[in-house]
Length: 416
Image (cartoon, rainbow, N blue to C red):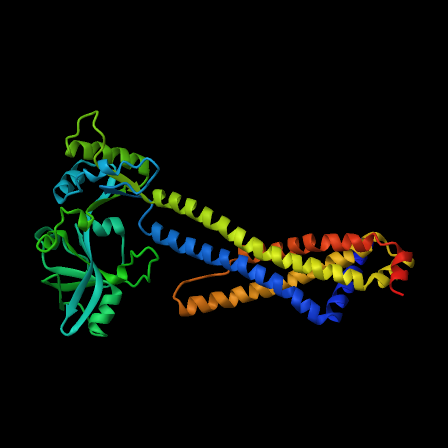
């Protein structure tokens, strides 16, 4: 109870001192407010960016292995000249993969061409990605359609001129008209729309279904060079339930080496990539960004802390006579210390709260006008308030110690 009373009295003195010097309090708050705003806003943006990237990457499938010409992971020793000589995955290898793989649930061949124009009557959409996919694409990728259907087995096998379009393309080309059954034109060919992807929103890694169309791969052979690296041909292989990616990769290595007739001592001439490779790269990238954010925000807080310390020393100087009287009537050193320490902490907490408020309104503005989802997480709030308390303690400790160690007689005399 005594300790609680001391805290309450110290807090009351601190509040009274802050209210009594409004202009000084406001100027002191600015430094801490800017510092907390800087460091928390950096972390809020970085956390939101990391979350959006991870969600986009995870949408590729954590149980899917990608068979490419080039590996995704790059290290200091990256023999690109060897990778350059590798053959690209080919459509001719697809049937062998489907027949020989023992641990795969589904296999798909995918190639693509970007930045194409799609037309319907007098309307057109530019910058469209056109994907050529084998029939197993839906089983691997698991997308949803808002209307229509996926390719039938006959349409995929015979290469029928049919197409599934993204939600944005449907809106811009048909402008409210039902697109199903309509013919669109792209790359000099016509195809009938049989389905529309469900709208998923913009992906931060640029892999959204909203702005792309897919066609059967055997139809795409009429206008797309599937055996060229420019179309980024690859296999997507989804593991069976209960099969790990390591087991699937071992199975894929065995079958791919057999298909390409590689001698036992020859290196693999293909790359097996998975989402975890990208996740590790994201971890490394954001660890560096987080460190940069701490340094940038730390300097801002340091400046604010110096401002608080300076104001507290001035406050001690102005109240020297009062401190002497308090000590003369029996106030202990720790009461004087807590009085000034609480004042510094309270200043920083108010500044931190205002900084967090600015960040909150900033996230609303960014999300509304820039179409980038930024959120102020509970961890960011706790971090901001904790940083405020720590800065308050550090900046207020020396002034509080100097006040608590004043000689009462000398303190009273200095005020006369």
